[in-house]
Amino acid sequence: MEILDIGFIDKDFIKAVEQESGQEISRCYQCGNCTAGCPLSFSYDIPVHQIMRLIQVGQKEKVLRSHAIWLCATCETCTTRCPCEVDVARVMDTLRIMARREGMVSERGIRRFYDAFLESVKRHGRLFEVGLLLRYNLQRGRPFADADLAPKLLGKGKLHFLPDDIKGIDAVRGIFERITKKMGL
Image (cartoon, rainbow, N blue to C red; front, side, top):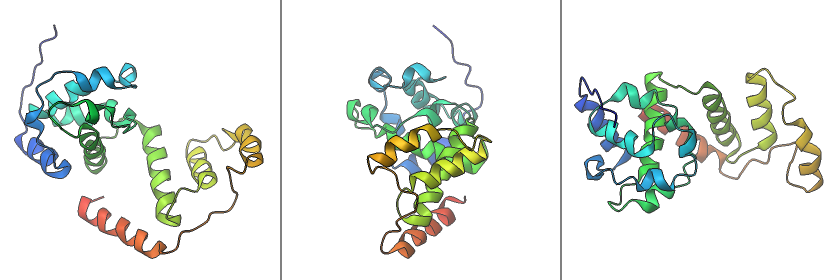
């Protein structure tokens, strides 16, 4: 069993996570159901239940620099399995936002994809797949990555070369502006 050297306990971090996520982190008693049910836990540097424990003991840097918060697919299996009714997926979302705000993003490729996805939704009100892939692949320096998938998707009508903006796009952009201002991004 590994002994956790907790050092400094950042109580402000604990309060911030609880306030921003709307979850009472202290309710988690480390049963491990979240980790046991997570389909991606094999790829995490820190298992989900240990992320929750690190939050409880105020280990801001360890949590926000973890790869796990960026690899989480937000499938909500953890939330569904939690006997304490903690919305663990919401906590993981909150941690990603906090990591961006603090400049502690550990997964650069995932951050690029995340940013490209959000930019697509901001511009069009929904995901424009071709634009997302082009932006993401250009940022990675691999402009033709995934190009072999296009003919199959085009043939099935699943991919469009031009975006289709939603009605009321200004309302969506207003949401992005409010969130950006509120979160300090």
